[in-house]
Amino acid sequence: MSAGIPKVNIAVQDRVLLHLFENDEQADRYLAEVALTRPGIAESCALHPPNVSRTMRDLLKKQYVSEHTRNIRGEERRQKTWQLTDEGRTEALHKHKSLGKNKVVLRDEGGELLEVEALEAAERLATDISLLQILMHAQHEGVLTYGDIRFGKIKHSKQEEIAPPGRLTALTGVHSTYNNQPPNTRPVHGRKEQIDDLKSWFSSRKPCAVVHGIAGIGKSTLVAHWLKQNLEINPGLSICWYPCQPWDRALGIATSLLHRFGIDESHDPYNLIETLPLQPAGKIDVDNWRRRLTAYLTDADTIRERFKDDSGGPPPYWLIILDDVHHIESEAKDLLGALLQISTKTPLRLLLISRTKPTIYDRRDVHTRGIVTELSLQGLTKPEIKNWLKNFDSGDKY
Image 1 (tube, rainbow, N blue to C red):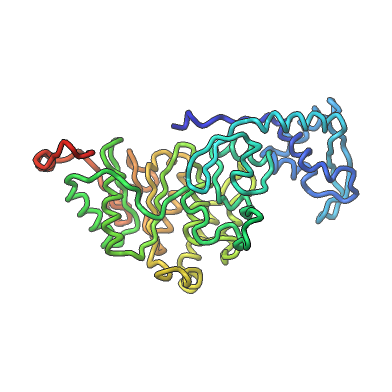
Image 2 (image 1 turned 30 degrees about the vertical axis):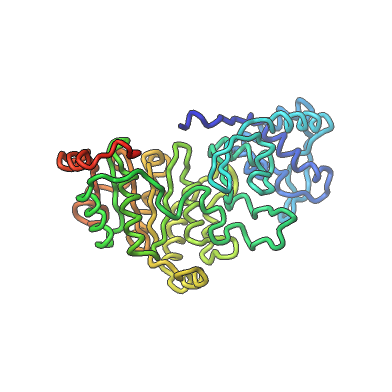
């Protein structure tokens, strides 16, 4: 599936030219922004600072940029800055047009994957991010998602009377990366013992359960079937069903979870958004994210205040289901370990669906500490198959 995602790879010099082109209004200013300095260019273009200096030497030889020493806003000392020359502006404009034709993949408000030209992506995502930001996110993360808090506020059309405060109002873009209900699946035949095991795990309030088995054995179908039954008994349960994809990254999962926990620009008492890098290719501070999220989820007054206007009030706890977690285990190992630790101290339950046993915990968590419950899914038993065939109707879909 990941083979179908178009590869975006922007050359270093092209990144720098695009960045300077997007900040060309600052040319010749006495007081410049940090975006024109070496650290600012490195951050925006996902480069190490030494690579910026090396690239600038090449661009100076081509006479695409000129070098200056200017006062920087918010800084005490003058710093070296760069701006485009007339030849550089012509080249940068050409690069802007050609690179804008690159295909990128985005997930729209309805959760559909779309393949569009990079120049169209900002409008589809209803945001004001630049072409360089779009290309950098596509290069390092694969898929751009509607509602990503790193893209700033959603840009509303003029026809809308009032724009909601902040980007992450309740359930804004909620289905773009995850679902708050179990997916529709085929009918379940048999599996009474496994369903009873899931019921036993849930009633025992253990932090984590792992359902593992070969591809196509019915792991997601079983969990979805059990969850639908559980929601009839516990309608106040808050669900986050996240279908992991091969291109997913720890940062994307962490961002989606903050959506689900009600974090937005107008409600972030523990500054959780600060733990997310706002630039492409940035790394999430997992330890800081874990500490602050633990504090947030255990603050009963804050949670009560956040969800007081929702139907049913604040949820008793959250159930996070990560489906096909084997796709992301190597990439998001630290984040998954942090989630497991959070689940032991907060009203959060974790259910992992995987083709293999995850390696984010050790055997003591299963056999001694009682933190993880493992459920190995095998094929149907002979009595279950016999009963299914006995009631089999050739007109049934399954």
